[in-house]
Length: 464
Image (cartoon, rainbow, N blue to C red; front, side):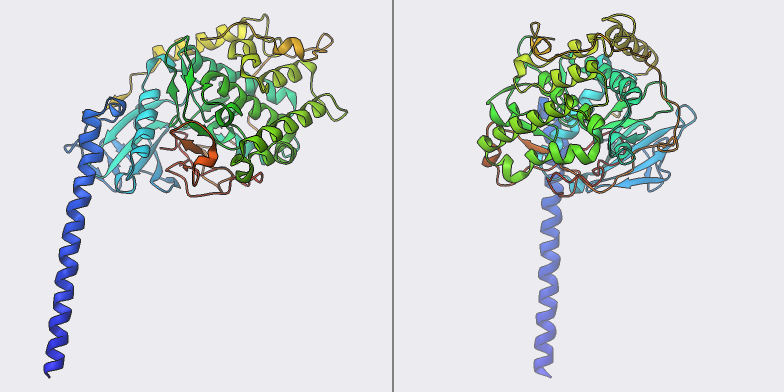
């Protein structure tokens, strides 16, 4: 009897201890929440884009404010994406970010960068995802955006052996126009890849750029030197790993060159020629990575000048001009758009069309609501054989809807094929014990086998 009473007392003491520990944990969690989401955003200028906490807005499992949370489009490590519609905007998507799951400053900076970039009226453009609203409640941050199409990598799934030039040309023109808007305003995206390009062949503007969590502004128009390592295997420029600093605008050009290369090669050949040099075991050894870059570029040039090349000489010139290992000789975005391959009736038309689209878009879009340049002329083109004189180019036109790509609300998440790497310091990746993954994504293989689009929370808004 005494033994039973003793055990009962011990059990009661145990439960008391557990309750006390839980109370202490809850207190620490609340203090951490206030530090992360109230104290730091109010005092750190780099986090000023995060709106103040609102406690007055109605928030239920089925709605936040005036926005209904309708069909679930996808799940991520830290968020759920819903469809939503209002009388004014029937095609919206809402990413509900669970604040309890975001516990580090890196994630906070990603959210702030995303909101700050997409809220800038200077980069409102049909080719850049529109951020409609940002709502900050006690438990969530909601990013309300327009709905987009499927991501470009999903499109590659139906074109494993490459895409025809009549499809590539208008698609890439719209991609380059969106990048030009960013670069004209001194923004570097820094994570351009097929997974971050929404593709809607039924729309007048074929693509939308998404995921601005790594987007940054260069210091000035004349100083675009950046130092932090970030990007996705297969698409980040070699100088990010091999140099102490890099030009973010030129790094973006390499990335869209990689996208064009995958459009040309198809996913199968792109994986074998290109992705192998981005294996983590190689990235940890900069010298080995530099050698692999040279090999991959040589194989790419051989393909471009070989018997299997089925595209125009103009396309080849643009492709090799962007995939130039030396950033100082790499094309700028203006050189890309001014090239005859993309020029419709003159060398400046594609660029002026981009500016016109941006101006038109900025006039008709309402401001985001929150609750509470280029270097000197380059010589890359001169060194690349351009047998384009005999090429004839059809006019650029939007693509009709296709069976391969029906009009879809949004890119639904799939199996991750490559994760984002981000180190706040410059230098070798070998300094990192593990790559810093995009906070929104589960770990995935950094391998040449990219088996599906990453979990970017469908939104087209971003990884946070």
